[in-house]
Length: 433
Ligand SMILES: Cc1cc2nc3c(=O)[nH]c(=O)nc-3n(C[C@H](O)[C@H](O)[C@H](O)COP(=O)(O)OP(=O)(O)OC[C@H]3O[C@@H](n4cnc5c(N)ncnc54)[C@H](O)[C@@H]3O)c2cc1C
Image (cartoon, rainbow, N blue to C red; front, top):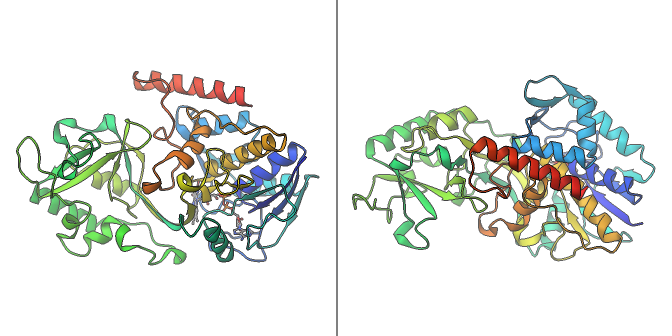
């Protein structure tokens, strides 16, 4: 049996520690609260939910609903505690946050194979342990941030994310859009373009300036990089600033007319699927209903549906494709694992899911077997795929969505397709379990 050091008593760390302990391993779990806290946590509880009390949809044909069903098959502690604290919320899976955190704290704290140490960790030294799991989340403390950064060769640890919305391809009006990459460099089928005339562009800029934004938390203030500003911030710098930034029309003449539009919104295929497009450079702090209203002003996007909305937060995360394997091991030292939001997944459920998997992979390694990742066409396996196989140049954190789950079904009517995908995923997870 192995000895494992787990750093971070949040969703991922608790799920991982419990999964290991249940398999007979000995775990030392290090949590810095209450000795030192973060800007978002309020208690000393393990598994504290820092903001909403929702685990999102419970419908199995929704990607996060499928993920929860898969985690239940894999005996997830977080799902078990969430079920015990569940409160009515329609289609959503919401919990009484205090009961939830109390249940997690009790299960982890009373496990005979887990010792909880209330100490801040500031290095990646494995010491006498066989494995180390770093699960310190989006608000990893500074000394450990510095240690992780050094471990990664000061290349690929970030403290802020800038997420552009993702749109479903089948909701686009293709008659109004055209394929072209700037100056025809690269493949012509990488980018779709939405052209705007002056009137449309100026109305769009006006609407952006009046849009309602999420307030910045104190700890998020002013961390905008010039190369990665929210679109509303760019718009506030002058009516033409967006036309010289993400909405630049040069090199994007419409092949049908041969003319250069006044401004262009580019849509790029998501790496992992042809079903979804990313709005290039459209990271934003706009509230979700505002994103919907404004982006539907773009010609061709009038009826668009969103696989993910844009956002920007303070968020510590690693460039997963550069540094991690699909089994959440660091490429530099396969005995050092990362789990939770620090890997570039996003959300309570996704973070817990990666902790659950890390425990299983460590269990395999400790019995001398090379861990094999869960198939990518499952929701839980897709997290490893996102973390390890996305483009390293454009890596940004993501929730689980159908855009990251591998399509093992191919062309079919959407509802039928989802049902088939769900059946295949659940069967694969049962086999893995
Ligand atoms: C302001 C804010 C709002 C959010 N709102 C939502 C939401 O509404 N819904 C949602 O799904 N997700 C939300 N998230 C994301 C959510 O917090 C994460 O997805 C989830 O908590 C990540 O789980 P984790 O285990 O990776 O990290 P966490 O749950 O944050 O756990 C990490 C733990 O590590 C500890 N730690 C940090 N550094 C050290 C150290 N050096 N030594 C020892 N311990 C350390 C921390 O105290 C913490 O307990 C939000 C995040 C933030 C910051």
